[in-house]
Amino acid sequence: MVLILGSYDHETKPALVTLKSCLASGLMSEEWTALVVLVDDIDVYKIDVPESTESLFVISETAETGLSLFVVRSRLLVDAVDMGRSTEDVDHVVAGFVSERYAGTVLKLPILDKVTVLASIMQVAFLVRHVELTRGGEYIELAYLIGLERASGGKLWFLKREGFELSSMAWEILDKFGVQMRSYINVEGMCAEALRVVRNLALRGPFPPKV
Image 1 (cartoon, rainbow, N blue to C red):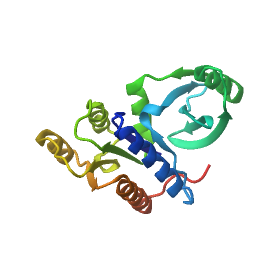
Image 2: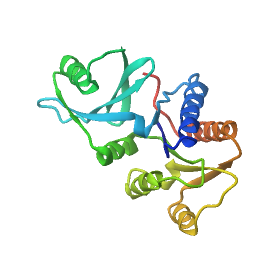
Image 3: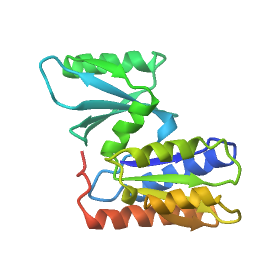
């Protein structure tokens, strides 16, 4: 799993969407599964199956093509299901899917628990700083990821567009916790850097196989 975090201002959001598309298409031919997600665009549900201690989660993602569900078991992506378009509430669709497939129930996770689950299964996370002034929510997400034992600094990458400076505090946080840094001039350059990072990480250790 590749996570993408960043501000949703009118300049950064299109850049994040483009990065997601570039990574998804650029990694499609690899032997391992590449699930690329924008953190703010997905929900995570915990699956409770009677008399089972197995760790199961469902990740829901709604796009123009419809709803997709991704099943994670023991920190591995094991199933991907295209649910198509529906006027039904997503929570109800997920609940019905889990009831039929696993005879279980679901609990929709709040934001911090969602990020905790994502951090436990991700291979890499990109925090994008595309403009100088933002609301700063992405820094809160970064700090939370840094604080999780399962999200080491080696998995976190800071992508910054050239043309403006970061604060001294931001630099100290990145340095202290080993967050990797890449700069870029334009969105095309950002995509190229991110693709290079993911492919190089895959060479260092096994990524999940295709589901």
